[in-house]
Amino acid sequence: MNLKVVLDTNIFISGIHWNGPSYKILQAWFEDRCEFICSTEILEEIVKTLKEFKVPLSKEEINWWENLILEKSTIVNPSEKIDIVKDQDDNKFIEAAIEGKASYIISQDKHLLVIKEYRGIKIVTPEDYLKLTSNN
Image (tube, rainbow, N blue to C red; front, side, top):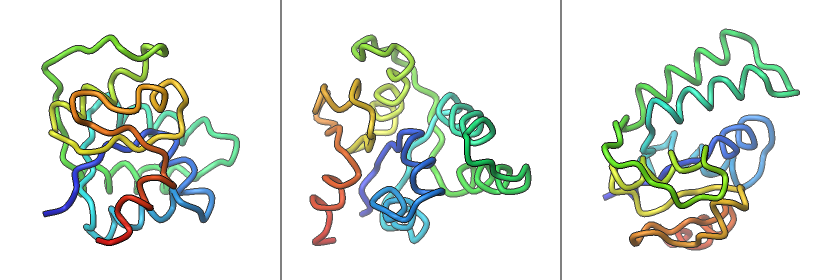
């Protein structure tokens, strides 16, 4: 069984634009080595960020990523509202992880990473996730 993960928006931005740990995580998801748990709220943030990011993508590329996420991820509709992250906007990642029963939230955001773990969901950097799962 594949690990269920929630990917922060910054994983998509880094993984699409640079060839590093975030790219490897997107590759693992693309190759079905992990299951991406996503909510409509997260998808909207990813699309908005891709549109506004300083390294522009074409409308077609953004649509391709949006469609890929819709097709290849498990979309959840969180029923529980959480208020634990200092940056309130980041609570949606924990809400999606709870609803989708994810094992990990992968992020480069210090407001999320400082929590480390919530209800058994580990919040880790891309580098740490790759180290933790390298035996898979």
